[in-house]
Length: 172
Image (tube, rainbow, N blue to C red; front, side, top):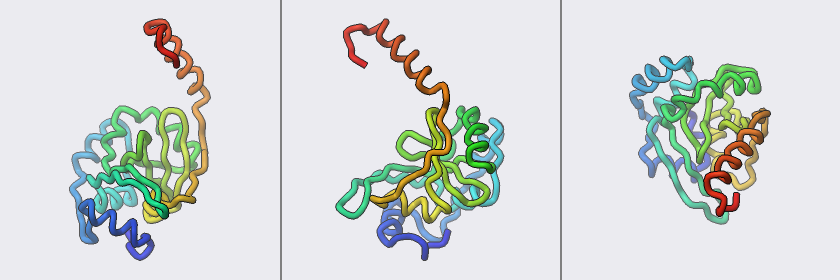
């Protein structure tokens, strides 16, 4: 990771949460577990995880920075391999999970772009891990929607109907 590309605020947050430049986190268990599900890692994703693996950040915002909640623990994508094919078509490249942000997964692409997605939609957020980290705190940063699950509304409505039948006194 090129620390010269990180905002000083972002760099200080990372350091407060256990990151340091020479960090070399052991990611072998994650790689083995995720490869057994079909995920195929590549060098850029592995370098990100070796540097940032296991880092968890949950900080409030201020007048100049967004609040942010993210972690670099890719094993949370375990069980969600079925999402990957649609995301890779939308991204036009191979992806590998690098962690989680709020309630979505973060993915690195072979091109070094960073994306985020969940069952409902998939977004591009940055051209590199450094930009991703900066964008997480940037009040003006915007992600670009690349894919929407065409069945998402149908699945949500089905779930609401099931809940209404079981709990008719609650408004959804």
